[in-house]
Image (cartoon, rainbow, N blue to C red; front, side, top):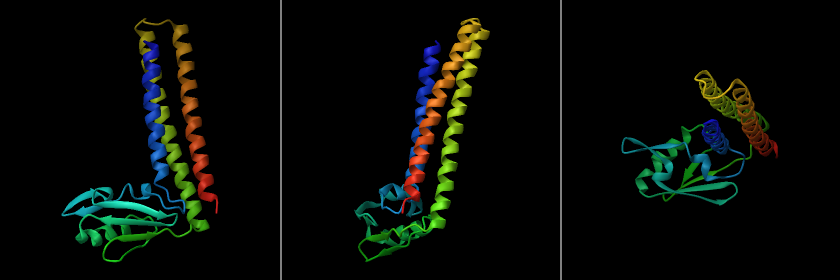
Length: 185
């Protein structure tokens, strides 16, 4: 019964870790990656549609991205969506495709992105702690209903804390790696 609580907690904490990792991938580091454009929605005949569903995104080199729309009429809408995304990049087009040059990050922008990393990491830690709280509540309910003893409950809560600490440590390591990546010129 208690081991099921551990398994469920680990699964939920892993999802929180993956969500944090995905948040980190949306931050621009001076290198072109297609994940930068993940959250951008294009107005496709009145429907907000993910950019990946209206064209092919490629990174021909480390500082350039290209978007080849499946319909030539979408070029203007794609440019407008990228302008409105607050990525700090300026798209250009040659009538066939949209090109985005990734400029090097300024010191000020690096610091702002580092703050964003800290914010995402804290959100991940809060999600993990919420899972810990749920796990502890389940264990306490087992104790209350006399399914486990008080000693078993205490041991289980200690184990829950160990699991929580391991996931918080993983999030901290991810955050530190991302910050180092951002601050490296």
